[in-house]
Image (tube, rainbow, N blue to C red):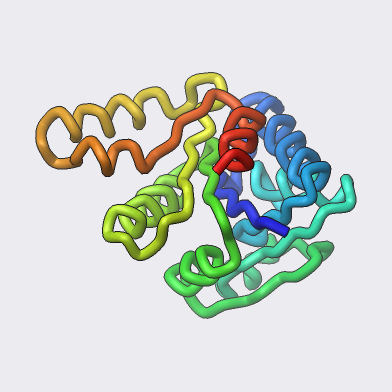
Length: 179
């Protein structure tokens, strides 16, 4: 079984469409016999992707720091919930459990996770694919900034290509299955 790590928000965003999309991704992972690895929360986009996968009979692995458990937002119904000490430990463990990384809409934590995992790929710590799911153009500005960094000589063409951008998760999953 391949595991997809999903970086996404603990918030729901405006309107219900972000959580609906995330729930559909979770369902699709289960339908494709892929496991979900994510940050372990029960709320927002994070909770929706986990619930979608679980509701469709999939396996969900959550990794969450104790400080977030203390806020009572840990998901109690996961296949496995691993509690770690720090956010750094969380990211390292999520990396260990995953075969690919998907960034969905989210805030600063999502951006941190995406940029760190792409940096690790840039430094050749791993060769796992990194996907940006640019749902409804959510990541347009970020992707344009990555291109600007490239144009200014701070990011090589090869390193820019480490970020695989797709408008929807179905296309990204199809790409991953072709690798």
